[in-house]
Figure 1 (tube, rainbow, N blue to C red):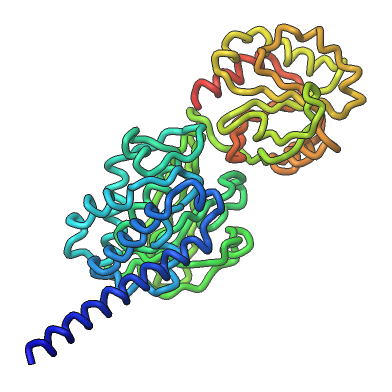
Figure 2 (figure 1 turned 60 degrees about the vertical axis):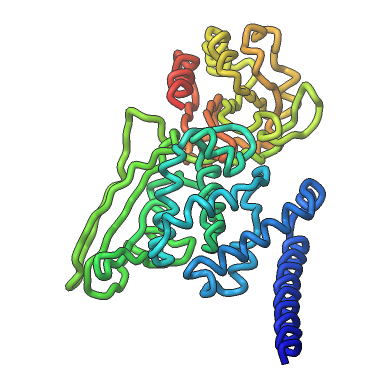
Length: 407
């Protein structure tokens, strides 16, 4: 009888091990099926086997783990990849750090606590390089917005909470504020804000200016204006709705700091006169800020502006970022006297604006009243514009450096 019981126990244990192993292999196959090709070749199979084991451990041990739907677990907990960061062993370390801190919390409370933990370890600082890995961000204690959100997603996944990045492509143009970007409404239920959802394209003028229907109760209106430094000038307004109510709000501004005033697509193509090839602005400038100028040949406002920049050659070279100067087309480039501006910073790149696409987009996006030249912008490769000067001006070099020193 004992032999039969022992054999049965061994059979059950063997079956359980086989079931666990088959589940791990199933999830491992899922990862390999959907991961980018470089991830297959850059990291050994053992690395992903460990990630699957850790994900399943978190799912089994965290109180909300079994409540996570299978689809969300596979797509937003299991993967280690968040952005274009180098993959690391952050999942194991984050789980050890966070598990005791989250004891006794609901999933909603845990999400907030993980966010607090990330904020305790990392502060915002603009960076130009490839997205750092979660552990690298922890070690340096700083990162740009994409790196901070990569860290948060990795930390949430480590404790079996589904998470992914959702990017906001543009922060500019506040004459028609956009929901989720410039303002949100939350219904206060038992003292807790519950975000009201609207279509992604919802704006103040199209969806709110003529009024919206809401249940009676307490609400929170949150507004924000993103500055070039990454800070957000936020405000929160509480109101009680019992009958027809009219609300007004003004997005905060700070004239002392550099503010995002529009957007310019860093993926736009131009013709590089030195390399005699079409290139994107991003491929020339690399990640970060750069100056973009659209100029005309034998043109006094252009000549004056370029001489102003040449007077600060050393300062621009110390800054180290590219100044991309574009003429209208190859014909105007042939008429331009480049030797007259040999004292410009060595970081200047000459080119032409293919079909004047860049100029037309800038005029439309920044709502310039004409296409007159020159136009000088300070932009970054996240498509943000923080400075614009069109037409004749004095001390342009000084104006540009004043903004650059605040970035």
